[in-house]
Image 1 (cartoon, rainbow, N blue to C red):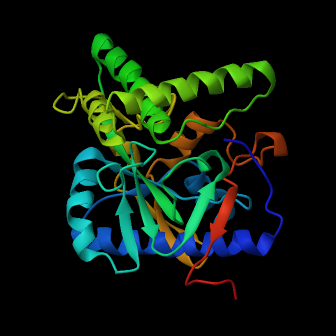
Image 2: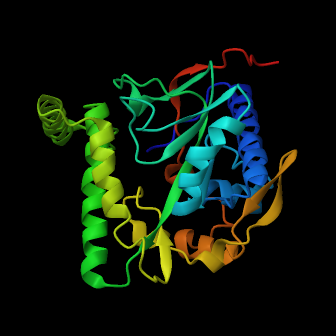
Length: 287
């Protein structure tokens, strides 16, 4: 994931506003169902450092413990306003990720690295499950290796052309390998849903253990994003533009662990976003 500045700043602001609308709906439904959640990663930094979005950010990240995440997937659809929907490998045949989106129907926000994917991503927010990360070194090693492998294969099954931060012969060779892997996965009937089950089995290996920490196993380095339940919950409310969001209780501990000096604005070359090659606001046009 790289950084590309929006040519029209108003377009980015409108995308952020619609993302806040989705987040407000998630908050409403979670409040009704008594499901704990917290904003995560760059969204949490935005809440603390900017009282809203990081100026160049274009997505929202939310975390839930696995049991609450599963309950959200089961119970939220009946509570959601008809403008919204949950998307994941359980609902979309060509979904690209092992976590879920809460989406805004009738819109499109397709990042450049999803160009060749049959699933056309709507404007959405990311909802990540937190799974126990085992205290047993052997089990933890299995979790890390297997979730990394199956997570990459889920994406490659959905699209043969992932984002690559390099060019030249290396890019040519890696893309060739990706296309080959994609073809083999299709040939042997490996759908994203089947691969998701393997990823999830690995992520949940320690589900019934007493573990010190939880982790987002969709990340390339879950150990760097591990956290205890008590560091996150009960989440605390912080202002975020015209609304409030729930941030981890020990946000300073977590963000320092994950980012270092997170209150310092990073240089342009270290910024990240998900610049879309297709952005369509559908029934929610810019004012």
